[in-house]
Image 1 (cartoon, rainbow, N blue to C red):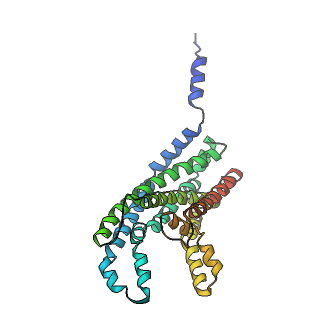
Image 2: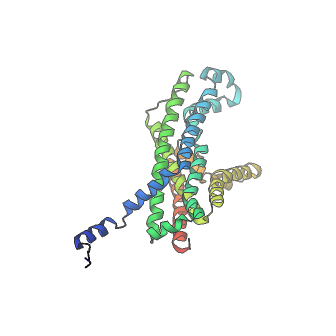
Image 3: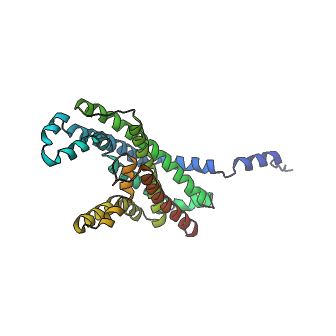
Length: 288
């Protein structure tokens, strides 16, 4: 004689409730994916090393204030002294451009890596609506890049200010301008990660995603600068202020053609938002 066993209704309901798909669980899944990749750790460490190391190098090679006064003679003296007032910001954020390239590569890889391995099909099977998956990736990547940017920017300022102070320049690590520059640099790196993630979702190719993101960050400013200098076209110079990397420098406290801080923030947000929305739409409507 055989005995038939059945799962009690209460236990079944409890299991279904525990297995229910929620956005926090999708976020947790994406966090596990990101932190278990070996490349993630090395990429983030390299971003910190670049920001701090380049800042330290620039601060070390800047001449002392007395030497600058001796050299700054003639018509360029006023310009040299004006630049000296911003040496702390310039040195502390000198590595931001290189760090943004590293973060952009990470952002593109987070999205395109799943396409190249075919893991994206399993992800879509687990989250059929797709947008929560993409939103969770974006949130996790932004927070990680922001935290790394905050740590690296604060460390860079902490290294740069004492060196420049010993050389006769003014700098305050705890001034409101410095704190805003640190937060602005961290936010910029977070939004660069979002932008690159969107590019990766649009192109679905690792090589294409990295090339597209780095092209916007690195190549476009060079092209705009060359065209502006060779043709003396004012509108090109004005448009260059609204490129992603230039506006990001403005968020970190660097001068950007006279643009206000809010204009730099809006510009970077628009770049990230357009990439995110386009990536989300294509991800929803295309086959994996």
